[in-house]
Length: 279
Image 1: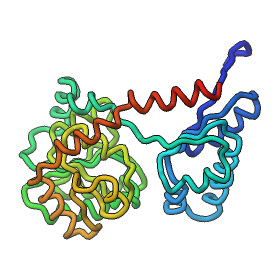
Image 2: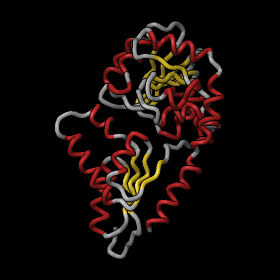
Image 3: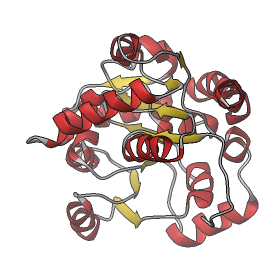
Image 4: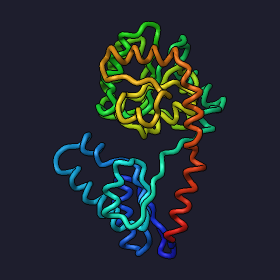
């Protein structure tokens, strides 16, 4: 930033962005819009010690300082009601067209990377953390005949995924792939996997936009997706059965129709209104 640059609004996304955005808002004397996309519950589930408590207090400060808060999870409304002067609910969005009609380049890149794979491809794209039941997913593949699991992402369980891929011809670990190539990998897959107890995950929207049937962990997501996905418990024997069931189902197109409503263009209008209102 040069000395003659000026900003009218600062936007901070959960978590670090909202906290840093609060400091910038105070220092520069400009309005703050908080983009609150993750519930504090998740942070307590993945972190221990005093850190979650500190982060929660800093987030609460951001809510109090904010001119407006856009939030995704209904469970967070109670926090906002007693702290934020102005807030509204939004949702995660997806670049629908890019996943519904992947480019030839993305498809070619994916095909070159994974080589020849028979039908029955299950795919997971995302963080390699315990919250996503990565180990249960890897174990489930051993109970599936004639299926291949593609895994793309990074995280604390990366070495476990690498080892599993080295030891099993049914698992292909791609590491971190450019996001613009993800639609290509999904276009070559048959089932998307999301083994997390969360109804608001970008990966499910991307799977849906690609027309994939989805295996979702049973729980909070059921009230949102209803019969649009196949549910499973985290057991290594239940997961393969759910993958087989999803592979036989015709839910992919119905989910795609539902996901179309979460196109970024529509959601961007909500952010534009928030910015122009507080400016």
